[in-house]
Image 1 (cartoon, each protein chain N blue to C red):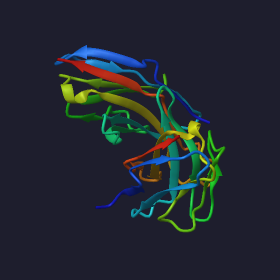
Image 2 (image 1 turned 180 degrees about the vertical axis):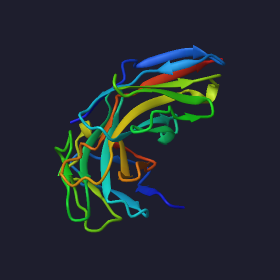
Image 3 (image 1 turned 60 degrees about the vertical axis):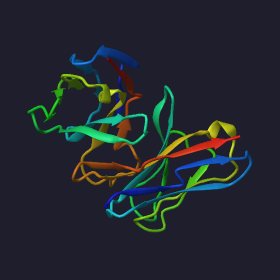
Image 4 (image 1 turned 120 degrees about the horizontal axis):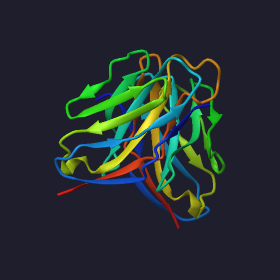
Length: 120
Length: 112
């Protein structure tokens, strides 16, 4: 089974600063996906960024980028030029690649989340 | 618009009552999941289904049941609601071969 750990329950930074959210995971799988999801007060789960484990290049989406260290099983999210609208819960998630033919739901695991507050 | 539809959006329920949360997807994903979200505990898996006709228990299955009669629908039933089941419930589906994950908009359930 996989585990995902987000060690920062809450973080607070000033607007325009850069912030990094940490995520570590444990797995014996070699091929998988990693995600960062944002959940604003509306409670909608919004995909921020996605990384395929077999790709060495770190994924980027505008102000959002990841530092994916496969050997260290680390997947941190960097938010540059933070904005007030970035205030939200952020969840790190792990998903096994491929068809689940072996039974079980261990293909999808979430961290407990980091509450990010952007101060004006 | 392709995606997952959850209903109701919110519900207040008396303890002891039966309640079914509905979840429908139109993406033909094989895998579907039900999570509950509680402050400080993140998303915890209640039940899952890897394909139509099969279901399995997650981390917190007690007091809940599911069925998967077809690919599109995955209802979650609380047979006799208790206050500890007050939570936000999310339905999700995944296409693991493509590495895609989708969420419904959630159901806020309050059991009094």
